[in-house]
Amino acid sequence: MSRLPDIVITNARTRSREVVDIAITDGAITAIGSRLDHAAQSFIDARGGLVTPAFVNPHLHLCKVWTLPMMSEAALEAYQGANMSEAAKAIEFAAVVKSKYDASWIIPNARRAVALAALHGNLHIRAFADVDTKARLEGVKALLAIREEFRGIVEIQVVAFPQDGLFREPGADGLMQKAMALGADVVGGIPWVEADEQHMRRHIDFCFDLAAEHGADVSMLLDDVGDATMRTLDIMARAVIARGVEGRALAHHCRAMALYPDSYLRELMVLLEKARVGVVSDPHTGPLHARVKELMGAGINVCLGQDDISDAYYPLGRNNMLEVAFLASHLLWMTKKSELETLYDMITTRAAAAMNLERYGLGLGCAANLVVLDQADVTEALRFHASPRIVISHGRVVDTERMRALAEAAGVP
Image (cartoon, rainbow, N blue to C red):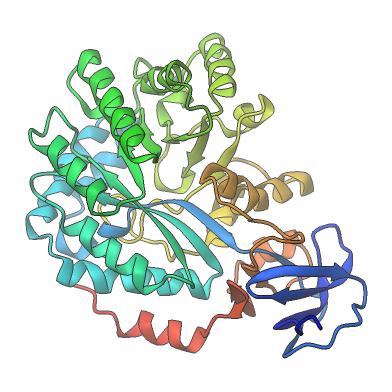
C-alpha cells in the first residue's frame, strides 16, 4: 500500500491560470491535477492564490551584508557616479572593511539575510565570499557555516570570489585553492580589475583550471565598469568554448555592454549563445546594466540577482526577489503583461537554469520547493512584492516565525 502524501495543496492557481491540487511526498511533487482524490497527512488551501516554484537568487555578496555602517559612502559614490567610469575605485574603498573580517560577526549578518530569504520564498542563493589577503578565508568559513545551518531550508552555493583580483592581489590564488578545498561550491572571478589584458586572460584561465580540478561551475563578474573597451565577457565566452564547458559558466553584471556598439553586441551575442553563457543582471545596483532585452531576443538566458544588501555598493535590499523584479520592471521598461511574466521567469526558472539547479520546477518528480502567494497572478504578485503566505522547502512548510526570530535576533555592526 502506497504511503499517504505528506501535504496536498488544494485550490492552487498555476501561471497558466489553471486551478489544481498538488500532492507532495518525501520532498517531491508526486501528483498534480484537478481535485485530486487523495488523503494526506496535512492539507494547505491555496485559496486560489498563485503557486510556483520558489524564488532563486543567483548573485548575492553574502559576506558583505549589513557592512555599510562600517564604512563611509565613498565606495557608493564611486560605483554609481561618473557613469560608472570609476567603479574600480569603489572596490578599493570597499576593501577597507575586510581588514576587520571575522567569521564571528559575518555569520550573524549572513544568518539575518538568509532568514529573510526564507521568509520571502527565496530558497536558492549563489553566495559570494571574498577571498584575498585581507579577508583571508573568514568570509568563506562563515558562509560554509551558514550553508550547513540552513541546509534543507535555503540551499546556498558558496562562491570563492577573488574580489580584488588574482594578480593585483599576490597570494589570492593560493587562498582560492584553499577555499575550494574547504568546500566552496563555485569558482568566482573578476578579471576586469586586473592591470592589463594579459593578466585578465591569466585570471580567467586560473579560474577555469581551478573549476576543472574540483568539477565546479564558474561565476564571473565581468566588465562592471563604464568603459566600452572592457570586453572580458568575450574572453570568458571563448574560454568556455575552447575548454568544452558550455553551460557551466555564468556571467554577472556585464555593465559595459550598455556602451557597446550594436555591431559588436551582435557578434558577442552569437558567441554567448554558442557558449551557453547566461547573464545575471542587477540593474537596481548601478546606473548601467546589461542589454537584457537584446540578449533574451538572441536566445541567451538572462536572470536577475539581488547583488547586495546594505553594503558599500547598495544601501537597501532584503533578499526579496519579487522586489528585485519589481524594480527591474521600471529600470528595464519591462511593463507589458508578457514582459512581467518574463521577469517572473528571471527570478525562478531562468535563474534556476543559470545555477544548474536539479529537479527545479512545478512538475512530477520536481523537488517540492514552492511558494503559495496571496495574489492570483504574476502582475499582482509583482505589484505588491509581499512575502508569500506559505513557503515550502523540501516538502516541508518553512517555520516563518522561527525565520523571523532569527532575522530579528541577528546583530548588525
